[in-house]
Amino acid sequence: MNEELKHRFYISTDKSKLDIAMIHNFLCSSYWAENIPLEILEKSIRNSLCFGLYEDHQQVGFARVITDYATSALLKDVFILEPYRGQGLGKWFVQYILEYPELQDVPRWLLGTKDAHGLYRRYGFKNLTEPEKMMMRLHPHADQH
Image 1 (tube, rainbow, N blue to C red):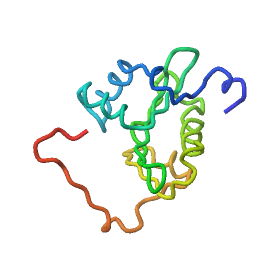
Image 2: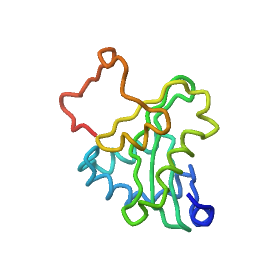
Image 3: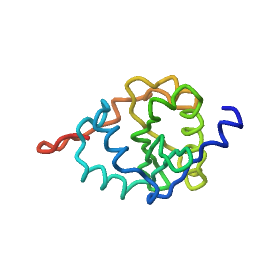
């Protein structure tokens, strides 16, 4: 990403800057959090390390990390709004998150993606080497987001 573009944008972990309505609107139409209730989104934000990508005061991207800051981290809900794609912002955003000082000692990162494998591979993510060791539990009475 060129330096001029970088000077127009900034990244913040200040949750008070987050545009919850914009985030909710985007995630409601995403394949991974379709129709997520606002209350669930707000709870997930409260309990995660969140990153906002901004142009001036307008939020144009979002991501969150679920982590204990010591042993593992799960990268979730990463997106850049459509008009801002194709400029290198996604790469810069992911790199910033992975280089975030408080997360440097975390040895194990996970994420789920349907269509962005190429983006994440450049940062060391790869397919699970032993997926048979990973398990999941779906709550029988709740929508899965």
